[in-house]
Image 1 (tube, rainbow, N blue to C red):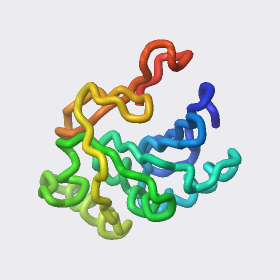
Image 2 (tube, rainbow, N blue to C red; image 1 turned 120 degrees about the vertical axis):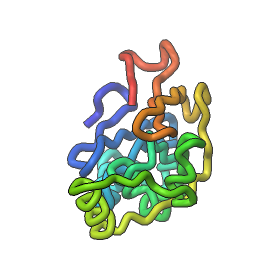
Image 3 (cartoon, helix red, strand yellow; image 1 turned 135 degrees about the horizontal axis):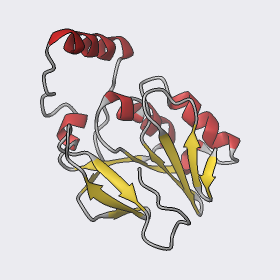
Image 4 (cartoon, rainbow, N blue to C red; image 1 turned 90 degrees about the horizontal axis):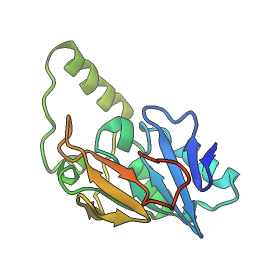
Length: 164
């Protein structure tokens, strides 16, 4: 669904919202949802008259499975570069250990991760606060994840205040 010109919300992606930004002949994908969402995303890309190979960049808001779960498969299918904030890149590739969650929630998260086979990609582009990638301004928003980021368009580029 095109929410404003050039920005699409891909419906029914499991886990997190996935957005497609279309500029010229290149597509930027923001977040990929849980593992198993790649097919829905590539089907959407093709439904708007584009090719999978038009997806040039996958930008991740952070490395959790619900946002990055299909990044590896999409990277393989599109040959896109994966971009994430430099503080979250080691978690994405599992070079840095995940924060331990105890109790029932921790047990459920570990079981879900094992059942969904979250294959983690290596980041190709490391982002920093105030960087610009494909027209998106990076805003470092550390919270539950030290590398969490939000993205806005520069003034005048989009008709509405866009924040991912």
